[in-house]
Amino acid sequence: MLTLRTPAPAPTAADEGGGDSAADRALRLLGLLARASRALTLAELSQQMGLPKATTHRLCSQLQANGHLARDVDGRGFAVGPALRRLALDALNHGSVRGLRHERLAALVAEVGETCNFTTLDGAAVLYLDRVEAPWPWRLTLDVGTHVPLHCTASGKLFLASLDDTARDALLRSLPLPRMTANTLGSRRALLAECAAIRQQGYALDREEFIAGLVALAVPVRDAQGQVRAAIAVHAPVARLTLKGAVARLPALQRAAAGMSALL
Image (cartoon, rainbow, N blue to C red; front, side, top):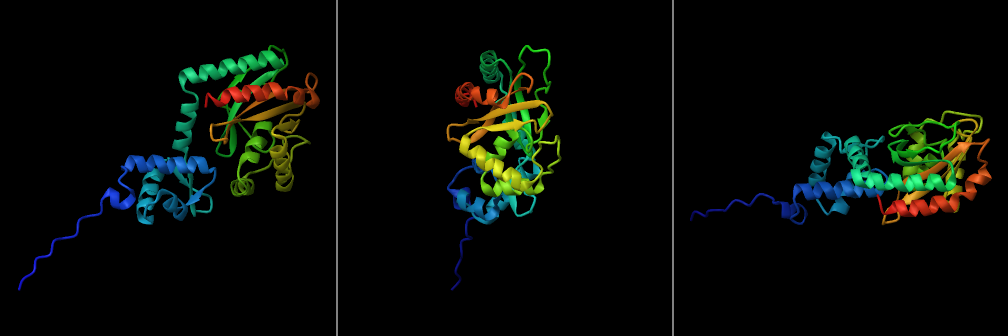
């Protein structure tokens, strides 16, 4: 007797991840990595996405090909890629929201009497998103779009302190630590101790570590989930602003940062 067998149906999207589309899965995966603040392995992504490893690997390969993902330095995990960072920065700088943030920054400068800036972490450097100059003849000019080091700036050390231990250790192992001034923290041990102090006190200082004669104080700007997404900093020459004077301006910066949180 001849028996006819019906071929098994091909796997569907529902079989591979609950019925969401490829675009939905890509956005969920990018969101996981953006929130993680560190590279995630294929196994971690597969588990958190609820997808088979093969499906997750195909998705990661596609996102890596277009620059939204990048392989971590050890080759075992996936991290945020340059295309995704550009997208995030473009979103932060979107028209009307950017104008509102600039107004808040200008109001802060009027209150504290010194130049203030709004920055974010961009890979292994600090990126200036906005800046308002105080009307003083002696000032440091750093244009919007400028990158500055992590290890010797107030905002940079703040971002280092905000990372989880794994991400911070990986970054510090790969980060060059050139001495910009006699006060620059040039060792991983010194920076780890500094990060611990920053997490405890809630702000970071630049004690003439980036440029001799210049001090700064930075505070975090957190999103609705409490993650540090940006920083507000004030800086000035020591002839005009002491470290004690910078700390005295801390409440004003914290109020400005709380207002900025709604504009992320």
